[in-house]
Length: 186
Image (cartoon, rainbow, N blue to C red):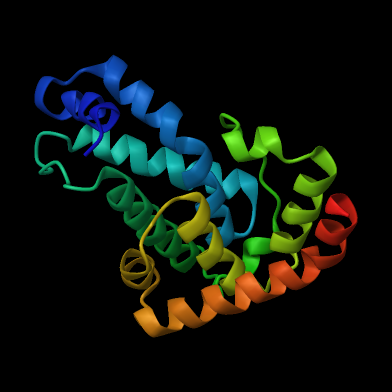
């Protein structure tokens, strides 16, 4: 567990609202993006994320702090989003709502800084062109840092399925990027 995650845990033991707000600020963009992949639009995704955080705050005394906070939050978002769809008489097939675009605000990684804007646009376009389930798995592994086992458990898939989907994603991305990479480095 990182020291930053340990800071977030102080709201459990101490009821520290400032730590809770920091945790919400840190995780909300990724959680909203994930919720949007399930419910299909940004407004409903925001509602799902808010519901999860409200429930955690209200039940913090009764909930045992999880070993992996990020995984716990993603699992809570998945369950809440699916319950939200069910209560509204809607279903989703393989999380096909992933096409909805959500703005993600975050700190640029060193790779983002080193990669030209045009190359970054090509990479983002290649990721967006992936089939919805494949894209969802790719984002959870590569952007959120989950292991194949965690993604398999989170999405109720086998580890082999996650592995196959990642292979497909990487092949399609590299294929789509081939011309732009060749052009920019020749």
